[in-house]
Amino acid sequence: DQQVKQNSPSLSVQEGRISILNCDYTNSMFDYFLWYKKYPAEGPTFLISISSIKDKNEDGRFTVFLNKSAKHLSLHIVPSQPGDSAVYFCAAANSGNTPLVFGKGTRLSVIA
Amino acid sequence: DTAVSQTPKYLVTQMGNDKSIKCEQNLGHDTMYWYKQDSKKFLKIMFSYNNKELIINETVPNRFSPKSPDKAHLNLHINSLELGDSAVYFCASSHGLGSARGYEQYFGPGTRLTVT
Image (cartoon, rainbow over all chains, first blue to last red; front, side, top):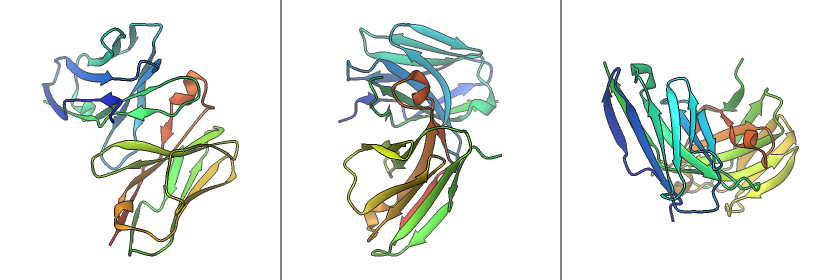
């Protein structure tokens, strides 16, 4: 029973273009959402988050959009750089002291 | 200046053995976690400790026993290892759950456990 789904296992994007990573969730109690980035042989690294009271959060080249009615969030990376090549995990939680639930990840390859 | 460190990085052992994985964080966080990433790449919470007290135990077999000697350390001991225990185990830490900062977790590099 996957509560957080990342339906695209991989994505290839040209350097300089926009990367859009998608995530869907099923649990309407989730009210906090995060994106983590993971390089091979390293642990995940926190990237950006959004609370359910917002629909957009921006940090430099990274923007997360939340559509609560569709139970969908996306991560936009503009412009994409080769160093962005990694696996990106979407995660969600009910901020009432419950653990994070992670998606399976999407492998992003940015081609120079 | 590693923030969250785990030892060992790789662990190969036979079925039936008992092994431990150690985790230390120097971030001053009061909450620590163990996650398991299985062959299907799902990253799932196993345990969480807050100030040395167990707060999350996600239906993990009794063969897995976490121990937190102090809030900077959370070790994982596994008894009677089985083939299905083969996975990458990640330790993480954060400020306390219940706040937004509690979800911004810092992960260690992982321990790849292979049970033969």
